[in-house]
Image (cartoon, rainbow, N blue to C red; front, side, top):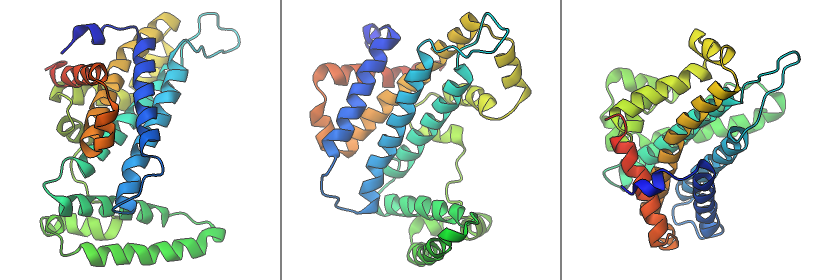
Length: 272
């Protein structure tokens, strides 16, 4: 772990990670897809993460929320923390599908189960002009189920889990915190940071107290502290992305790799 990289100003860290993520996306753009949708969504995961990352950077660098009659305004810290939680969930799901699998059959099952769950969720929409599309997607849901029934991971479901899979599409039975720990965060960091971010995502008393009682200096301090899990997540994402795509591994120079690995190591050690 190189402490020099961990003590850089946040703007330098934002710039470095944003550059590496955007270059990684550009490096794979237009390349042939060996496994169709399964490969396509490897890249879409990182693109969504990049969108969250740039949005966080925009909101976290001194933006003030203006309310009439208030002189000492808060930052957009609540919005930043909600986006950081979304970023952590994006990365942990990418890792679970594409890296935390014993073989290609497990990856295949996880990906198409994830895809099927998304299609099933869309079946809840009641929009007349999309009726035909939803009908086609229902056929796709049935086709995927027929194909996956014989896969080993399906056979490992308990009867209760199998019912949830059939009815709701639920296929991942690990908690969000367990997924983060599996993906490289220490157990303490996974539990504490996810609980904190969740308090802002849901309308809890905790989030209202923390937001309403914070002045600009206090909310800036909260935001700056909570950027650390985002930077750890970015390091872990790039490291694992480079394991999935050799082109990305070749893209990173030695200094980039040392920077990325330092943040990965911090994720395993922080609050251990």
